[in-house]
Image (cartoon, rainbow, N blue to C red; front, side, top):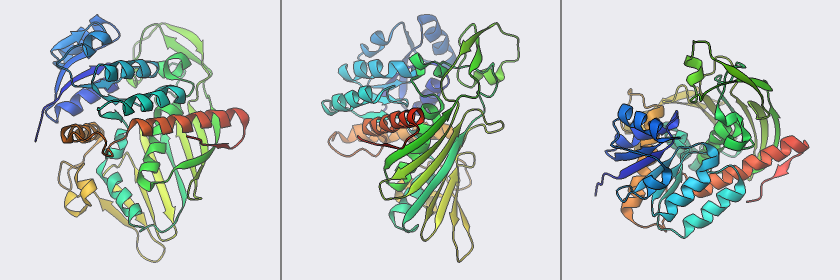
Length: 385
């Protein structure tokens, strides 16, 4: 059975329109949107061809047409928006981080248990098809015993003192900046691919630009790189991390390391991981999303190129195009939303979802708070969920 769901989206910065594009490609209808005010919502509704622009979030969730709410607002609003949406009987896909504290995320997990609703966190990068292929390779034991997991998530959009975003403000983005924004994607990814859980962390967080020039006006994520005209600024002291180095211990005894940075010149959006096992290794980079590297000691290495006709069923289920037709960042939103739609249509909300859940979002917050504690104390911190 196929159904075109009716969707509402809150948050109209960089990521909200990406959600809108993704669900529309499934045939879902974006009924209405909410921005920081009615004027922003009306302007975006005209540009994005959305029927309704709501003045408030409460107005949107009161609309009986809307079945699924996409929470794409600033981090500090995720908790309140998600609670209200669930209490209004709406399914929810919330951007990461699920909340700004583990206490809040735990409360959302408990609330979700009382609802017959789909509750997902948008760890969309899982949905590059070859990551599902990598997961199957690990599950089949082809890597042998995993002993080392290492990689990076690197960007450069905060490299200059004039680069600014609300994520740099703890009251809006939370206590962590680069780790919560992109490091969380890497941590979720390696746990998804390997099936392992982080058990301890040791972290060293850095702020390369302690005083930034904040434009006297709002700046959308990544949009500052496009600005060429002179702007008026105010100087703001920032404490949030714009880079970090983190060590991990996993529950099978494996070790890991991650470099996170939004101040690495030339790295636009590079998530990379390598997983080393006793029999072989594999590696992936988001800037070459259709390629999965396989490493061997006693024979030639391989590069597997995405081709649904050669991939396992789980990978096939998140690939829409044949081999040689690249599927990229926008496709990942569509594939995650598709899994949520399918789950809703099955109607069994006691079944284990095959998309990132609020439990996954809560686990990430617990790890992130341990990373912050480790950086402050200079000690290894155990993960207790």
